[in-house]
Every structure is written in structure tokens, then in C-alpha cells.
Amino acid sequence: MWDAPGFEALPAKALFVLRLRRGFMMLIIIVMLVVADVVIRQLVGVPLPPLVLPAMTALAALAVGWTWTRLAWEAVGWRLNDSTFETRSGVYWKVWKGIPRDRVQFVEVTSGPLQRYYGLATLVVRTAGVRTPAVSVEDLAADVAERLRAELSPEAPGPVPGNRVTEPGL
Image 1 (cartoon, rainbow, N blue to C red):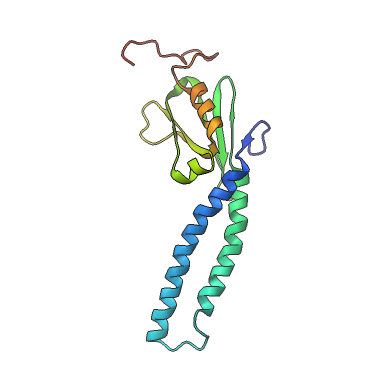
Image 2: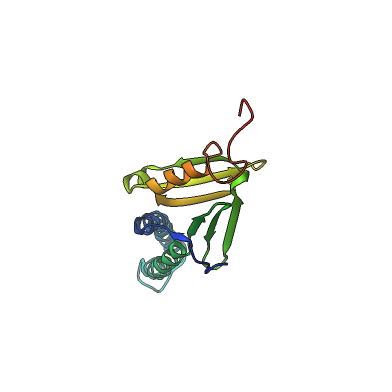
């Protein structure tokens, strides 16, 4: 299932945006480490020079984060066929989701400022009776997300029976 053929990968720009997001979080953590180092030095005498522990921790976290982000980006994929929309993700904890096309109720494309700048978008697919998104794929190329939205939309004509809204008022 995880190595099944036909899954589309995210664009290379998505890796860059993912690293930017995680780098921003890393910056916040580094600032917290520096503040903790200063506070601890005020309260307890530490034999190491100032900021050595935060620097060592930040470098180790940066190396692990850089590699993990690449692995996470490579693990994300999606595929669409006549009957289902499938996604996969996860490095350590793998997640596969498949939605029958005739169960799709609502499809939306969202894009934050960073995504818009790099031409990316998030596709959210909802099914009947579920408050949370059934499937969400972040950092797709914007044109691909829009094409998927059009193909998965319940109003879109397609080869899947029941993929067209037929009741009035829906």
C-alpha cells in the first residue's frame, strides 16, 4: 500500500515552504532556549560558557529537523482514479486515506500568504456527516489543487455514479 504505484508527489517548492515553516518554529524554540539559559545562569552557576547549551541543542535539532522534513515531504502523495481519491503521508507513523468519489460532499482550496507567494495551495475534501476534513493535502501546486477541486466536486460531471447533485436545493 505504501509503495503502490501511481501516487503523485508534492512539488519541490513544497519542501522549501515546509522547511520555512519548521525553521520559524525552530527560531521560536531557540529564543526560548536562550532565555532559559540566561535565567538558569542567574539562578545556578553553570560551568559552561554562556549560550553553549542552546547552540549545541539548536544545531542538533536543525540537523534532525532538516532530514526529517525531507523524509516527511517525500512520504506525502496523492492519487485520483475513477472511484477513489487517496492520500498517503507519514515517516514513522504512516497514514493512508481513501475516499470514494461518490461520498465527496464538499471540496475547497485554501491558500495562505506563504503558499500564494510560492504558487501552492491546500486541498480539503469533506464527506457526509464528518465535521473535520476527511482528507487534506497541503502544499499542492495551486493549479493541481484547483484541477482536483473541479474533478472531485459533487457538481462535476464524471464517470462516477452519484457524483452529480440531483436533488433540488443542494
